Amino acid sequence: MRRDLWAGLAWLGVLTICVALRVGLGAADSSYLVTVAPYMLVSAGTPVAVLIGTMRHRPPHRSGWFLLAAAQVFYAIADGMTVRDSWLGDFLEPTPADLMYFAYYLLLSAAVLMFIRRRTPGWDMPSAVDALVVAISAGLLSWIYVLQPLTADSELPLNAKLTQSAYPVLDLMVLILAVRLVMGTGTRGPVLYLVLGSLTTMLAVDAAYAVEGIADGGAVFEAYLDAMWMISLGLLGAAALHPGIRRFDQRSETALPDASPARLGVLAVAVLMAPGVQFIEWLRGDPVSVPLISAACAIMFLLVLARMYGLVAAQRRAAVTDSLTGLHTRRHFTQALAVECRRAARAGHGVGLLVIDVDHFKKVNDGYGHPAGDQVLREVARRLATASRAGGVVARYGGEEFVVLAPHTGPGDLHALAERLRTEVAGLPVDAGGHLLSVTVSVGAATTTHPDPESLMHAADEALYAAKAAGRNRCVLAASPQPATT
Image (cartoon, rainbow, N blue to C red; front, side):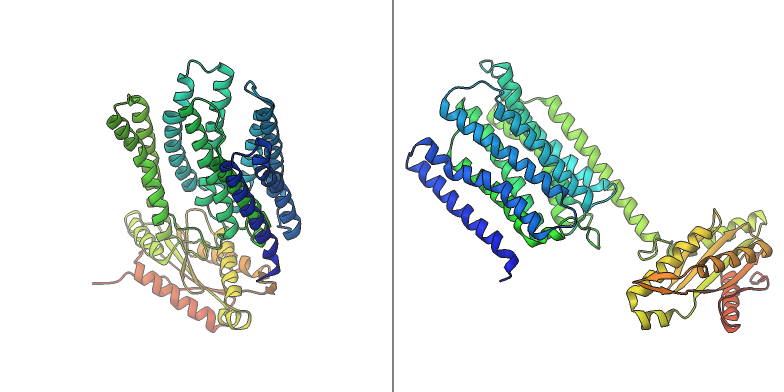
């Protein structure tokens, strides 16, 4: 077993002992301070574990983990204040401990948000929409079973109502971020699952605490709730002590499946939650807010429609976009060429076509490997797209061959465009995996005022062969092709 895992295993061992002691002492009816001592040990030890893991494994970006440690410090202080208040007797809400818990939620949310931004740079709207669907469903449950009973309790002072209502709202905020974290891109592994296990356990036990407090009409001090809180804290400490935090905030090389069965299952449960709650309340004979349920269903329906639109748009983009270079695909180019030829035949203007081939590309793959070859293709594609005319179509035709469709272009302008593209590619070496490679292209050009897709493509291909035969790294303009006769 690797040495890196020893600290995490030792922490989990301490956690297991403390949880067993907390449950056992609670069942033995020991004194209050003795009973909560194992809980306080885990609470105070969690920020220490997070700091030790961060300093030991030294992840590339430590700010999120330091924020997490600071959040756990506030949580431990709040726990200590709660124990003191419970030991001394009655207290009025909000207490100083509540303020410390609120600070914990804010720091925890900031840390998770930082993880999300590191793992998924830019905007990931599909994951954001998915998180919003789950949040609306969870918010509906929170309102019906927690917030509404709290606000309807006439015996509870206003300060206590506001304080106790703040916790479900903060839990909902953390839930949104947790869902966003798991549904976004980024590396998978034990650290992610430990963090998610910690957050979901904390949210579940907070909900159980609130519901039981409402049902009992007072504070709840049950051993099993403390045990669940301890497990939540312990999982967070184990995540920080795991060596995987070195790669936790790295993006995955490939995006997550946008419509995986697990993701669709979560969304299906979330969408069906509103009518399910309405049916359950109807069976119980309890009144339910029809406008609230209707509004939640309508919003989630619109969000699902937005996700469907996003999926269709993504599939369309994937069908016409080359995954390696980001240029158009051969299929899209073929359709665009046919459309432009028909348009030019009606209007009588010229159509230009360039067929571009990377010189000696096989030597790059054989000498430096396929990753270097892929980098060369990506850089050549970028330079071609940058130097091309507005309104044209640049596509990867296959392998190391590219094509450029240039509408409204005569022979002189087309040759100038071909020379500009050739010069742009050959201007600077390409950095391919630490190797600076000199890259050139050969260009075959053809233009006609009597456009026929097959004839134009054949003429450009013949010109490309002539450029290669003449020594490569040059442009050759073909004679104007004649339209096919029938």
